[in-house]
Image (cartoon, rainbow, N blue to C red; front, side, top):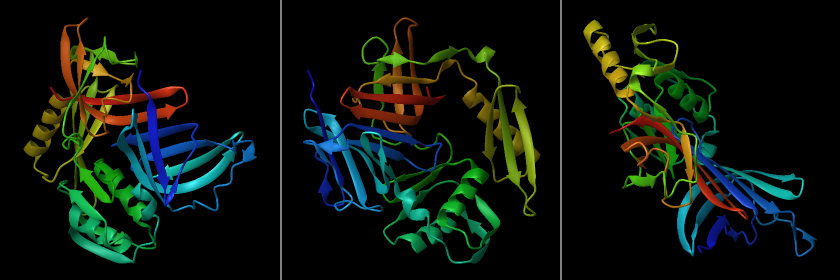
Length: 317
């Protein structure tokens, strides 16, 4: 029998009691979050933590079995609330730091990586940028905007995977960057608690790809490929050549039009899977093995046990 163990530190204060922790991470969202619930009373006395922790403090959450701890979250304390019989600590990753106003600036013909480096340099000199998304803004005006405002616009414009690992801001083309150093294996008969997975045959799929090019005048040139009425996938490219646009659309469609699983499944705390990583599913009932990109992970840890819900994206192999 495994024993649940944890170590949660906020600034210099280590939590001594815990009801539950829920950690949510996704490459589809700009921020990872954690919600820590503590009992309001300890030893029949109302718990007061406001003198020990403060909004903006560093947060580190480590979870595991039998003292084999893994860091599941690094971020900042966003708020302290009291909800019924719980003291609720809401936390967010380094996106917390991006809620600062930037210097007014007009950028011209600026590459995305250079733009991001200029932004984070104004926020925190310890921040770095890992960006391999090839995208150029012919014009970008920053006027009374926060760094979060700019990141949100970039996310809307590019549909890139934008997320933080510590103080490193990652920006990558969708499904092209794998986090973690290994592909975790899940056997549907052994280490999967429950499943919301649905098998879909590629012949039954409706996938339409939109490939877009932003002209220097700001207008969008778009080409579509596939079948409408289902999932729509958007991709931005650098070339405005008609042939390049259609080839990009067809290639992207072929990446999505596969037979495989869609949805999510729930396992235990181990093996540890990260958003942006990969999992290999073994389904002996179907005689099927497949490797999938992980778009999101939600960890629930508390008095009733621990579980990890894994959301799947595109099939990789």
